Amino acid sequence: MGEHSTLSRRSLLCGLGLLAGSGGLGAESPRSATSTFRETSVAGHLPRALALVGDRYHNADYIRTALNRLFLESGVPIAFTINFSEIDAAHLAGYDLFVLFRDGLDWPNGYLQPDDYSYSESLENPGDWPKEEYRGWISEEQGKAIKEFVEAGGGLYAYHNSSNVSLFSRNFREVMGGAYLGHPALRPFKVKVVKPDHPLTQGVREFMVNDEQHYVTYDKDPQNILLRSENIDGLNFETYGATAISGWAHDYGKGRVVFTAVGHTLHALWQPEYYKLQKNALRWLLRMS
Image (tube, rainbow, N blue to C red; front, top):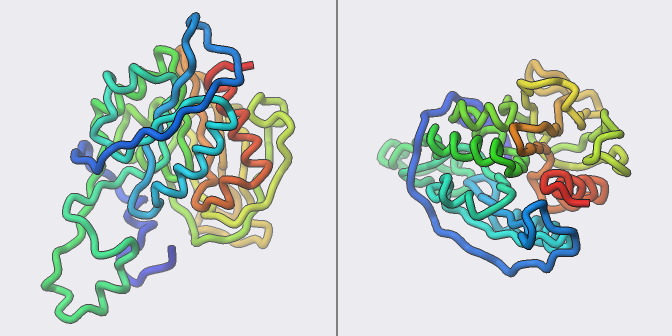
């Protein structure tokens, strides 16, 4: 990622969001998996997942690579889309689990390159280039659709930078349970299990990872917090210190919600202990044995 002299990615993600946003890039449905688990309580119904993935700072390919392995090994069919405009009540109705792995930003006028800040300053006559502008892609109606999907018994797995979406939708924040504060550059940190008796953390040991240490706030019962990250070198982030909430799980209506903060790189997503936790999360979200 890197630091920037004028407009940083961190400041963009921390900024207050505009409601609404439209447009999309397309959708894709990869191969399905054969279930190795028992079916859900609806007789003859195989659980299915939909994942909205990818943004300016997180290429959809590495996310799809990571999640394809996870879901195939877990026996849960998953479809992928990068088209945020199709997330609505009608579309979600065909699934049991919604996976969100992207930030809340839409760039309607495009951008020069994935990380353009220093590059654009070096251009001749930089003032002649179109100014980058962002807005939130999620509308309150979409946030309500996700909230009601979970209330009715669906699952929500929010990964990594998806906590930023909460800055743009009150409804989404209500069901997800928290919001993004910021993060430093990639650096090593430890993830500690603070509730080892929860189904998500069964058999999971603390682990080290080199990743973006995301800092988030959690609005609901602190007893739902399962993971905390710590920079063991004592490096702080702004005024938030060296430790941060790194994961939680809670019930919402008839459904369930999980958030885990690690996920900026493929090797972090496939860290063995974290991978084990993600498998546990799928079982818990879909109420599988």
